[in-house]
Length: 411
Image 1 (tube, rainbow, N blue to C red):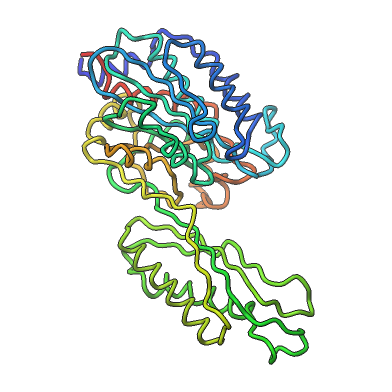
Image 2: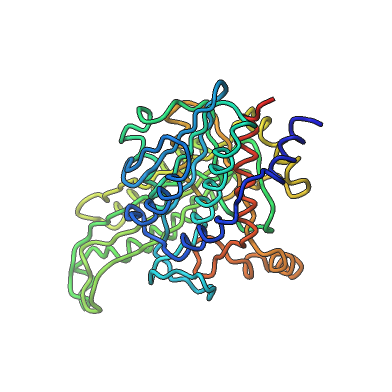
């Protein structure tokens, strides 16, 4: 048998009780907590880690947790999972729906955490099959893109051994049981741009006495879409979405300010930089055209780096995934969502691979594909009806174990 076949045979029957994962996952789903407020979730993670023989450090950059297993000579491999939730009202109707009104695990971080914990238990119990150092990193506050940077700023590099490679995964709308992987960009870089426009207030009956920031904001929104449609080459990808346009509070007053909040995403930093230069040019020009009393304030935040898988890491991980999942090991499409995972390997200066895990019920997926209604009928991340299948929890756990053993398997 090949090394990959040995790993696949082991994952199929690791000889470790994993029956607890269902209750661990349902507790996670029932008790979501918003970014930077994940106290109970961190406690839930720590209570399970306390049953294992590892070095645990907690409260890193907020509620961040690391667990380290040292098991002889070999590479040091880090696997990361996030565990914060979203301000979304759950509409799935399942028996284990969120018990925290207005808060929901609508992005699958409960799956990520359960999957990594399952891999932890397997490697903790079966030290006879692997050698090296394994680091499990449980990250808070991914949804606000502050969790990874907060852990780094709080001395992450001094609290854990330096990894040689970093791994992670995210659930994704696709047939349950499928694991997607690819070298190169798999998730977009992103930024939030907050634009404050300054005008001159006046009574709504006398607009000639004003510099109307609402009209100015509307003109900017239209012109921004011209950047995407006319300045980004067709073979490149870019998104400029206006998520917020706020201006005024009454019907009979022209306000003195307006605010735009943009969400921008790219797969190429050169395209990003060229686009941002155009965004600022449009804003300045429209302000000049309107005769504003002051230039616009433009503030960048919520930066997410490009998730750009290393080709050499992919050559190590993909053959194992192919052996474990067979036809359900597929090439990852580029996903326009963004992640702060890559900040961790970038900080350590090491390569990485980030996987995508299909989590849609196959009957729902197949029917949507057949009707050409995937965009309409398949629940997506961040929606109230998003609910990964229980099968996808097991798939994510097996994928995590497979990726780790691709590096740590004892020959």
